[in-house]
Length: 451
Image 1 (spheres, helix red, strand yellow):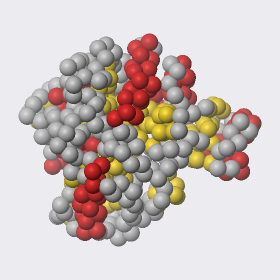
Image 2 (cartoon, one colour; image 1 turned 90 degrees about the vertical axis):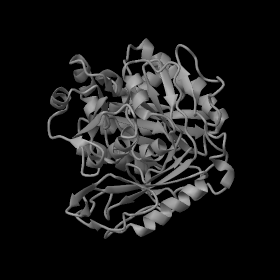
Image 3 (spheres, rainbow, N blue to C red; image 1 turned 180 degrees about the vertical axis):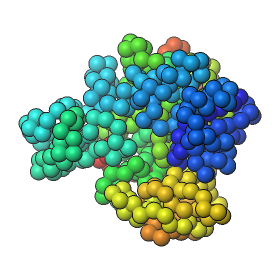
């Protein structure tokens, strides 16, 4: 197969790495790609449709959310190119938080109570209904940073003032503040079925102890300690299956990656958000755990038929994000990176080559992934590698996976064979292979809503 990968970040570097291992692959192309992705793919400056035509592409895999929101998948399918990525209408589940909230309410999917407002004054009035704190979210795409968790009315007022000052035409969602461990549940979706990847836990806050501003993600634990098998089965019944039914009822063609951001509350899992593409940095942690052929599954989803397929995985992964000084506000870039020859996977998010050297070009620079039979082994390898990698002003969290220390939490001979599948029809959850072990016991510290 000739495959075209759209994107240039750490997520796409991980996708290129995984796709390149497939025996089905004839050649991989990337638009625009990056210096790191060029280790696996031929990069091109053509636009996506022109590249698909020029290279005789059999499958297009879209990485970032912005082109999906613009309708790139629809355009490619219209011209006969099978595409892994939802159409524009389905991508509104990520592109508009108010649209997603309406979808959840319409299909009785557990989520936080909310109000959607279109002016500062309307927002101030709505805040009175959230006396115990609120998560205030910009309606549109914001790179994972358009959410502020407010503990007091004064903080809520300041956030609303900032959002509406920056954009007087903004739409803003005000939600009740939920608490509990967060889980990112990613699955390949063919419009009828959901084939789950290992559940993971992203760490959105910049600083140790889950404090500081929200970021695009500072580290990941996979599989997620907060989602043992019984919680995966509960999420399947209450969230995954109603979501699939809702997509079908609303006529939304979803052939791509469905990302369900969950808060594991005392009342059960509730949806924080939907995303319509692989998460970043979750992808850098979960793809290395897969034992099967990712390209075969991406192609099957793009053609609308994942029936009879499974997604085996095993072991544990810890990804630590190394970021530039000043991130997420104003990162300092142009710094040389040294020490990249390490015993870990290093996925490049914001780098470029300068001769034989690597230079920083963005806020999040690298995703360093340690693997092991247990979380403890994976964490040791990840941080051993991080300590060897250096660039001026580097910053990273030192507590990713710190509270998952018991060696039995992942990776025995039977665990996890398959995180599970959900399908309508047929219903695939609960067969002989699924879910053998969707996660592990032992919860990390309680977190508050960060998306």
